[in-house]
Amino acid sequence: MNTLTIAWLALPFFIGFISYLLPQLDRYLSLGVAIASLGYSLLLFAEPPLTLQLLDSFGVTLQLDPLAGFFILTNALVTAAVILYCWQSGRTAFFYMQMIILHGSVNAAFACTDFISLYVALEVISIAAFLLIAYPRTDRSIWVGLRYLFTSNIAMLFYLMGAVLVYQATHSFAFAGLAAAPPEAIALICLGLLVKGGIFVSGLWLPLTHSESETPVSALLSGVVVKAGVLPLARFALLIEEIDPLIRAFGVGTALLGVGYAVFEKDTKRMLAFHTVSQLGFILAAPEVGGFYALTHGLVKSALFLIAAKLPSRNFKELQHQPMPRSIWIALVMASFSISGFPLLSGFGAKVLTMKSLLPWQVIGMNLAALGTAISFAKFIFLPHENREKPEKYQLGFWAAVVLLIGGLAVANGVYYEAYTVANIIKPLGTIALGWLLYQFVFRQIVIKLPRLLEQFDQLVGMMSVMLVLLFWMVLA
Image (cartoon, rainbow, N blue to C red; front, side, top):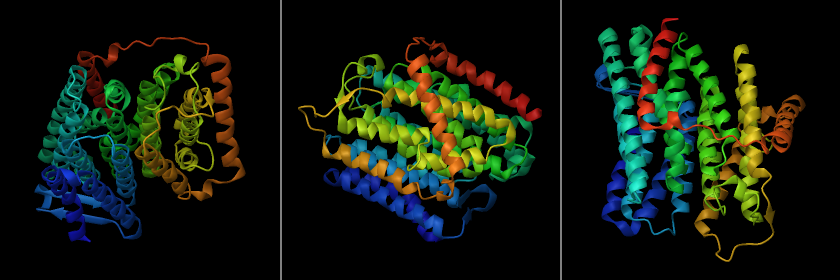
């Protein structure tokens, strides 16, 4: 198992460069890597947890367990779906190479449990994501990519300083050393990961980046990339009892912040991006079951970004007067049902499991976030549709990707089949029904333009300082 793990981690980087040398095989090689990750993730659910320590405390520490398995499975399915979506798009070998390098570095981030190896993985993610965001080579895409890269690098400087302080205190870079680290180390490391994961106000770089990227890149960013910063935070909460309330508090705050913006957002891609922020909060609100929620969210959000690209407009007001083909609407409704917590799709089980794992002080906030989710996705569910197709037929790759992702939601529904009790079914259905009523009679008529001041680059950097002060205060408290 040790040799298999090391080979699996190295495979995406080797195949990435090979695919660039053999461009005629780029799609096939990339899909093969995603399938290999799929197989390895399923193996993690059958085998006992694996811990690898290379070069003692100075080197690499890896932990592969069912929690990591959920995240790796998400990465495999989302990457495979994006490759299928791009199959007939004519994208170059460079695009597929960067996608697979991104895939491999995200897997590495999910496996690492030492601060330096995680730092390297996160930096490689930043570079690969920047190259994918800037792939169209337009002025807009290059600026959005650079904005992402600069924000990420600044956050990683804070993180690296925290990692040095942990080593100074414990002579180890292992995550467990955080328990004996000084408060400023915890604050610095958490700040870096909160920014990378798009958590709370330090994650307000996310809506512009995800909404302005190309569709397949948006699906990758929202589906898996931001989770590279979320899984380490979940591990901190599970490892160190004193950090658990801090992580849970940020989970609740993030869920409410994201949904608060999403309810009033009139742009489809920005609404989905804000919901990525909100759903990441659900993962951190209950870290012990966050893996299942991460899988569900990754599949749903990737599908929604791919489907949203086929809508006649990004503006909800315009979409209310432009009927879409019914086939697209059905796919959109199924994904919206899942993220809202409707039975028969894995979003239902993930929400029930998360709600059962909350502490008493979290319950009201997370129920409000669930209600906001139902209100937001009612915007999609109640859009007009008609039984016709546009003259241009949708490419086969698009439907293959959507079927894979939504089919994954249906299969994953069996992970927590114990959720199907009368009480568990009534509550989500009541929340969804209330959300639909509030949308129809209240929020559909409200037009509020939310300010984007905090999304500006200079404001993002300033908010990191504010967040650092807040973190330091919370850790001391």
